[in-house]
Length: 184
Image (cartoon, rainbow, N blue to C red):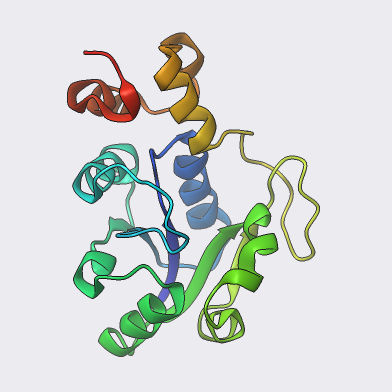
């Protein structure tokens, strides 16, 4: 079985994440997408609670056929891509893994633990990002949106900006749980 692993902070998930999953399922030779929220950010970035990010991923993407939101990094206690992939490969020897990353992430791979091994174990599917020129990346088909941008708009109370950028189920969760300094 060909499984695309799409890891990230998903802090919070936005329409770029949703569309990335749909794009991979539609255009790549994969049987399923495994969405893997980071338990702890590898570069020590502050994150909303893991349970909230998992629930937001399930609300944003869990409705898609052939997609599963995984808690594997909670089980492992760390968010190191190579360890996650090695664990998945050992637990599912019938899986052929691919790693889904945005073209912007390629610039950060020098900071990853054993990126060369990651690329061998799960050859990357590199999704184009607006304004990023990266070798091997597909065309920039996804919207120019980031979780950083979304968190800033939430903190400013700029909810109207978010209507086309964040699934409404995620915005409902953010409001209900008062994440990212959201008012009640």
